[in-house]
Amino acid sequence: MERISAASNLIIEVQPESWRLLVNGNENERVLVEAVPGEPLRYGASFGSRRHLPDSGILPREEIQSVVLGWSEKDDAWHLGLVLKGDLVDTRGSRWCGLAHWHDPLANQYLQAASQAGQTLAQQVDRPFTVIPPHGSEGSSTTMPVLANGAVAPSDATPTRIPVTTIEPAPQPIPQPNLPLTFDFWTLRPLDETHLALELSPSWGRGKLIRVAWNIIWLGVFVVLVVTTLISGIALPRPELLVWLGFASIIVLVILILYNLVATATHVNRIIFEKAGVRWLRGKRVRKAIPVDQIQEIYVSQVVSKVTKRGKSSQQRTVQYGELNLLLKNGKFQPVLTEHQSLQIIPVTDDPLNEEAVVPLTVYIARTHLQSAALKIASILGVSAEYDKRLK
Image (tube, rainbow, N blue to C red; front, side, top):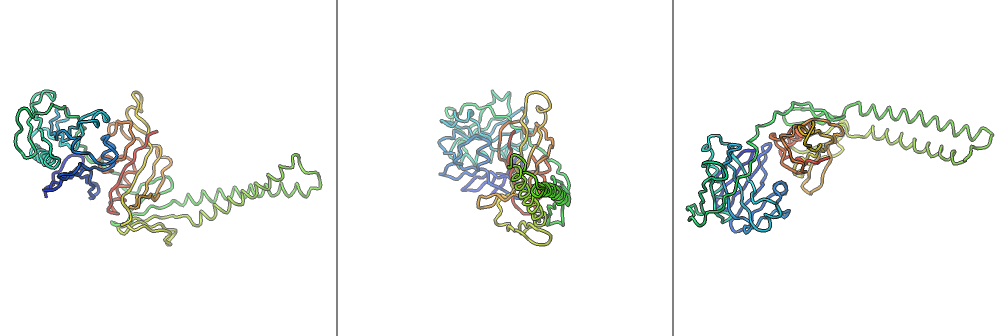
């Protein structure tokens, strides 16, 4: 088995009977694309969504015209992808489906590795392999078609030249903030090298108790008003419904007081992340626990502003809301943290598209504190992380 590294934390795994594209994040690898001889190309949901491929996760070989490795002068990189054909091209609006790229200013440092990755993929899907070298402009580059068996194709087999779609150069890891990180009333801090704790601020409990105190004051006011009205010896106020509203207000206030007292006394105030899994605690008492073998990944959802053509919103996005959840292997979500008011600013250059998407979360795209927290938690648990971008 050979492993070929590509930009954006991607790895191409080549074996005699399979070709796999993997993403490596937080020491955990996840398969994005897999090709096996005689079988259709298979891909993950997030990979297919970003490239407007069918939701089935399956790309028949009949929909693939060729495998192409092309040089792009715009970003000094080799780009490996598929040239598609058939009805799928009309649906997507493009024949090009990018897979991986290598930033190579010298145009020869990664050529051999990229060619090997492309040629072995062509062998698995039984399609021609074409290399477009960096001679002249992209539109007039000379093609070098190579068949799946490695032989040079005859001239009449030369495929139509396809301009290689420009993808941004390989990004550098984004420096992540150190712990502790604060989110509303919660703070994520390290306990040791293998444990993280998400702790609830005492101010949350004080706020609840202050609300209880105000409710008690209003309860006293309504009790005095109702009792005084009933024992005053004069006629009841008109309409008499006001008296019954007073009774209803007393009942509602009593319920609110009891609810807030119980919530304050029983609410989880600590969440521990460790190799074995996640524990929710109240004091030292464990209220809930999920073992790590039931956790599929850490799932971060954030609502961000749209990009416009003018003004500040054309240069930056505002993060308006965020959630951190555990995606369990049974398909259910377990809430961990909600960030109601973030107002963090992230640059548009990282993600200029006004499209909602779910993508692997790595240190190459993590810009917010909630994303950084997800990466740190994922690293402790030994699972991958996903980022769900929502627009508003």
